[in-house]
Image (tube, rainbow, N blue to C red):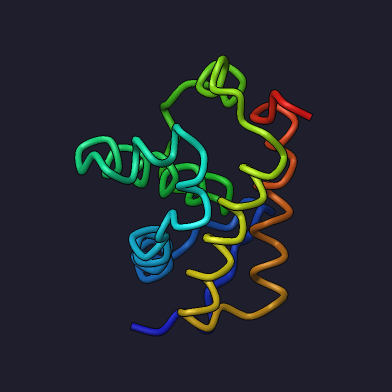
Length: 130
Protein backbone atom coordinates (compact mmCIF):
# COMPACT_ATOMS: atom_id res chain seq x y z
CA UNK A 1 0.00 0.00 0.00
CA UNK A 2 1.44 3.39 -0.94
CA UNK A 3 0.85 6.46 1.13
CA UNK A 4 1.98 9.04 -1.37
CA UNK A 5 -1.24 11.03 -1.01
CA UNK A 6 -1.58 10.85 2.76
CA UNK A 7 -2.30 14.18 4.39
CA UNK A 8 -2.05 14.96 8.06
CA UNK A 9 -4.74 17.59 8.35
CA UNK A 10 -4.76 19.41 11.66
CA UNK A 11 -7.67 21.57 10.56
CA UNK A 12 -10.29 19.13 11.84
CA UNK A 13 -10.51 16.90 8.76
CA UNK A 14 -10.69 13.23 9.70
CA UNK A 15 -8.32 10.89 7.88
CA UNK A 16 -9.82 8.05 5.92
CA UNK A 17 -9.43 4.41 6.95
CA UNK A 18 -6.69 4.16 4.32
CA UNK A 19 -4.84 7.05 5.95
CA UNK A 20 -5.18 5.44 9.38
CA UNK A 21 -3.79 2.19 7.96
CA UNK A 22 -0.98 4.19 6.35
CA UNK A 23 -0.16 5.83 9.69
CA UNK A 24 -0.11 2.39 11.31
CA UNK A 25 2.12 1.05 8.53
CA UNK A 26 4.60 3.91 8.91
CA UNK A 27 4.76 3.40 12.66
CA UNK A 28 5.06 -0.36 12.22
CA UNK A 29 8.16 0.25 10.12
CA UNK A 30 9.60 2.69 12.62
CA UNK A 31 12.82 0.80 13.28
CA UNK A 32 13.97 2.54 16.46
CA UNK A 33 17.53 2.02 15.27
CA UNK A 34 19.03 5.41 16.02
CA UNK A 35 16.65 5.86 18.93
CA UNK A 36 17.79 2.57 20.48
CA UNK A 37 20.91 4.38 21.70
CA UNK A 38 18.76 5.74 24.54
CA UNK A 39 18.14 3.25 27.36
CA UNK A 40 14.36 3.69 27.14
CA UNK A 41 14.20 2.96 23.43
CA UNK A 42 16.64 0.08 23.72
CA UNK A 43 14.43 -1.53 26.38
CA UNK A 44 11.34 -0.79 24.32
CA UNK A 45 12.77 -2.14 21.06
CA UNK A 46 13.85 -5.40 22.73
CA UNK A 47 10.50 -6.06 24.44
CA UNK A 48 7.74 -7.06 21.94
CA UNK A 49 4.85 -6.16 24.27
CA UNK A 50 6.37 -2.81 25.20
CA UNK A 51 7.19 -2.06 21.56
CA UNK A 52 3.63 -2.88 20.46
CA UNK A 53 2.22 -0.61 23.16
CA UNK A 54 4.61 2.22 22.22
CA UNK A 55 3.74 1.96 18.53
CA UNK A 56 -0.02 1.85 19.21
CA UNK A 57 0.23 4.98 21.34
CA UNK A 58 2.22 6.66 18.59
CA UNK A 59 -0.42 5.65 16.01
CA UNK A 60 -3.13 7.11 18.23
CA UNK A 61 -1.17 10.35 18.70
CA UNK A 62 -0.50 10.79 14.98
CA UNK A 63 -4.06 9.85 14.07
CA UNK A 64 -5.55 12.25 16.64
CA UNK A 65 -3.19 15.04 15.60
CA UNK A 66 -4.26 14.53 11.99
CA UNK A 67 -7.92 15.06 12.84
CA UNK A 68 -9.08 11.74 14.29
CA UNK A 69 -10.95 9.55 14.64
CA UNK A 70 -8.39 7.95 16.96
CA UNK A 71 -8.04 9.23 20.49
CA UNK A 72 -4.72 9.19 22.33
CA UNK A 73 -5.45 8.02 25.87
CA UNK A 74 -1.91 7.67 27.19
CA UNK A 75 -0.17 9.90 29.68
CA UNK A 76 0.71 13.47 28.79
CA UNK A 77 4.20 13.72 27.31
CA UNK A 78 5.84 15.31 30.35
CA UNK A 79 4.52 12.62 32.72
CA UNK A 80 5.19 9.76 30.31
CA UNK A 81 8.85 10.72 29.86
CA UNK A 82 9.67 12.08 33.30
CA UNK A 83 12.87 10.69 34.76
CA UNK A 84 14.01 9.03 31.52
CA UNK A 85 16.75 11.57 30.93
CA UNK A 86 15.88 11.96 27.26
CA UNK A 87 18.23 14.39 25.53
CA UNK A 88 17.71 16.50 22.45
CA UNK A 89 19.88 13.98 20.60
CA UNK A 90 17.64 11.11 21.71
CA UNK A 91 14.55 12.99 20.56
CA UNK A 92 16.17 13.84 17.23
CA UNK A 93 17.15 10.18 16.74
CA UNK A 94 13.52 9.11 17.07
CA UNK A 95 12.49 11.83 14.62
CA UNK A 96 15.14 10.56 12.18
CA UNK A 97 13.71 7.05 12.45
CA UNK A 98 10.19 8.38 11.86
CA UNK A 99 11.35 10.39 8.83
CA UNK A 100 13.07 7.26 7.48
CA UNK A 101 9.81 5.32 7.78
CA UNK A 102 7.88 8.16 6.09
CA UNK A 103 10.48 8.24 3.30
CA UNK A 104 10.18 4.49 2.80
CA UNK A 105 6.46 5.02 2.08
CA UNK A 106 7.24 8.01 -0.15
CA UNK A 107 5.23 10.45 1.97
CA UNK A 108 5.52 13.87 0.33
CA UNK A 109 7.61 16.66 1.82
CA UNK A 110 4.60 18.88 2.57
CA UNK A 111 2.78 16.08 4.41
CA UNK A 112 5.94 15.06 6.23
CA UNK A 113 6.58 18.63 7.34
CA UNK A 114 2.97 19.00 8.46
CA UNK A 115 3.21 15.89 10.62
CA UNK A 116 6.57 16.89 12.07
CA UNK A 117 5.11 20.32 12.77
CA UNK A 118 2.45 18.69 14.92
CA UNK A 119 4.84 16.35 16.73
CA UNK A 120 7.80 18.74 17.05
CA UNK A 121 6.32 20.94 19.78
CA UNK A 122 6.20 17.89 22.05
CA UNK A 123 10.00 18.05 22.31
CA UNK A 124 9.83 20.57 25.14
CA UNK A 125 7.68 18.19 27.17
CA UNK A 126 9.86 15.13 26.46
CA UNK A 127 13.47 16.33 26.59
CA UNK A 128 14.98 16.60 30.07
CA UNK A 129 18.72 16.83 29.34
CA UNK A 130 19.83 19.86 27.36
